View 1 (cartoon, helix red, strand yellow):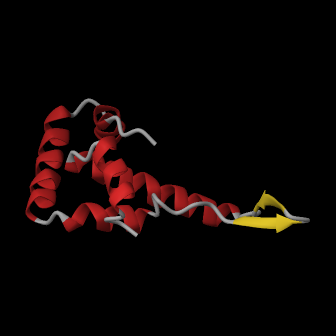
View 2: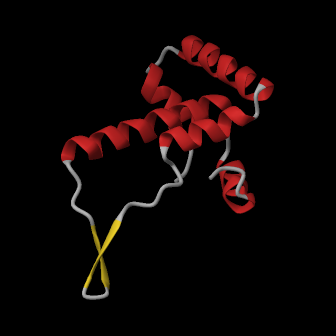
View 3: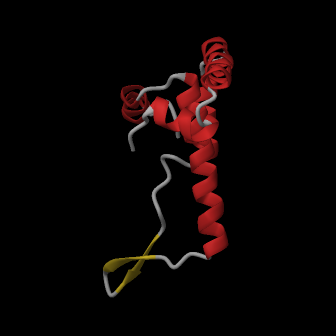
Length: 104
């Protein structure tokens, strides 16, 4: 998982860089004032959740998921990634959160 902040904001705002900058400034301010916000976004987006595995004869096989559930989860992760990018969270910070277990 790599956060490319500019690509994510561009996909959300297109070429309206003023709106993207204002959006990012709001979320950076919020993340600075409330550092727990980053962990909350990661938890709500399910970014650290591993996909379910079903064991068959001792071998793991992916669980068949409902297409609607898959789409919902993908949308949830995408929104969390967009907001984390707006907050200015880097991949190094996410890795550090995983290592220190700041986010369950």
